[in-house]
Image (tube, rainbow, N blue to C red; front, side, top):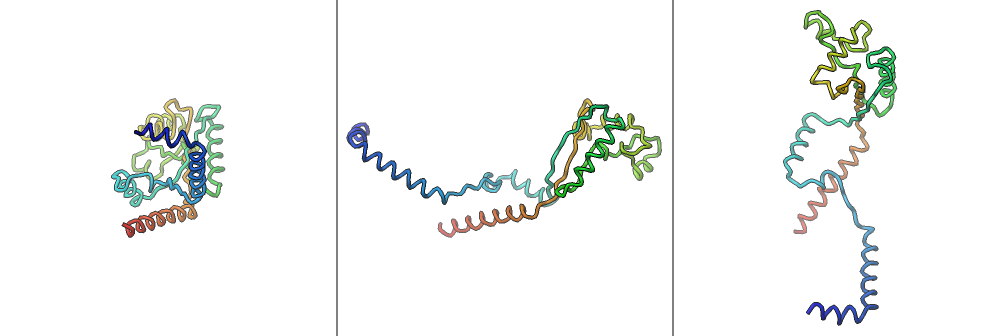
Length: 195
């Protein structure tokens, strides 16, 4: 039955079918200017998704920071004066950028096992690798052996260091994001009213 319809209608009237398809294509093209695709996290995730709810709860409680991770691999050993000075210089240059909130490097990690002083003393006036009176080899070994910092701020082999650049909040982007959320809510309300 379908084959007979296909032969009698479509194959016997190719020009008419072409005109109809052309008109349909033109109408799709014309109305495509009104098509909007919102690919934000609000529309891509299922409403009521427990993971999304958990993320929102954590973000509301602790806030969220935008950050960038850079790597630094010096030509000389990481604890050499040249490498420490280059990393320190790089940190200050990055920190001077107007969109940067703060910069965390290998040089900011507190060294607690670097001296033989009592623990309370070490906690009150902790040292870092950038301090001149620190035994850098001992401090570097402490960082490499630390389960907290190893593979986070320093690679396992100790040749590459991470630089964490915390980015300032951008009020304009937040306003745009909030506006998008408001538009989504308005659209949802409109749909509910129609139903």
